[in-house]
Length: 524
Image 1 (cartoon, one colour):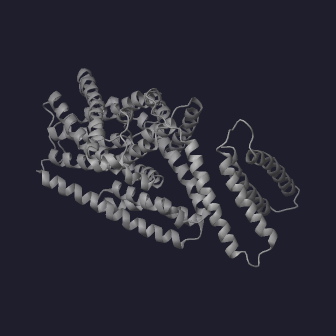
Image 2 (cartoon, one colour):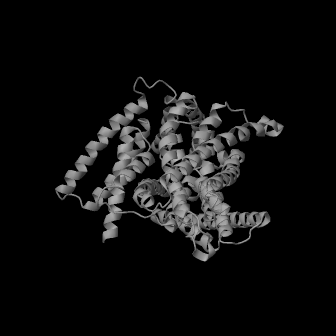
Image 3 (cartoon, one colour):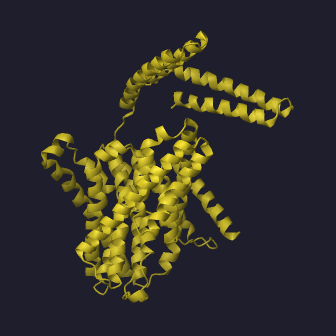
């Protein structure tokens, strides 16, 4: 009962924190992290402990899965080169550079343990960077690169951690052994992800009940991760591949009802998990600080060096990775040369998250299975401090930097124009389908359907015009909402007076709710 109460309290705090963040204009992860930091020192507040298995198997998979579902596969494919340079190349480089720097400062710590720390702090978070990027309004390609990096970099980092920990335990590992391990785990994860994505797609095609569709969708990331982990393959690669495959095909797999309901379910799951996970990270402060045995001076020095090196390495990597590749004619002809401000903003978007802390807590205890002595508690604290510093320093200043450097793109006009053009084509296709199937239908029905297509096309073109005056579609939406409000009131009175049963009210309310939700587009 106590654990249930604690869970309810955490969820309630995360909901309040998210609401406060929206009111203040901040992203929720920053506000909830600060709330967790403060609550960790409140006397009597439950002490939270993040189990690595809970994060890596219970929290991370659905977050990565829903992010992959929402990722544009064509855009991801076009940005694959910079994504892989960041998600693989930069993570490997960061792990070794940080490892050597920490080893120079702590010669008594084995190099393999220091490289493990470097791999732990290397991957930016999958939630915070893209949340801030979307709120700021960064260009779509920049958002795609940040999203793609965060989807794949955890896999690279966790493989590096596993290899470094194996070396720390005395297992001899060479370059070819590492390469073979990476290829096997990543390749196996890819195969598992594709296999289960195809199976899930087959189930979605066969299922006609929206609730069953939701159940299959919710189970998919967990089943994929459990199978991949049991086979010692990359569960992160598997769940990302499954999400990308299914997200690209959802319009053809699900009914309209299933898509709407599934979108609402995943938005709620994502909202709750994001909030709780950053709150839990903040609540770790008390336990992490109390476990430190290293002197304060060394702790501060190592933390400062690791944080500074992370920032510098990312900047030093971004500019060559952006511009040297364009010396190749094929890439230069295909991709425009971005302004120097673009890689600058991407370089500053290096916020770390919960995976860093979970990976740090997987470090073996000294003396366990032949592991030599090393400052494990210091490494866990450094990982925690890096999360806090990157979120509070880079996370709070990234919007200012993007606006200052003018790396902000308002595509609303271009999007409206593109939508209007495609809507015109879609309208013509709809009218052709209507003409081909209208034989025997009442003329009034055919004319009503023609009017709907014309109205939808007109609405799309209206969004291109000035919003200073109320458009016809906006006026229609405003008036129709008042009419629906009146209809809903009549049905409630009829239910209260016993003239209709509850089931009739529920059915009528659902029809009115669906229509009212469609009218919201005229206001947005």
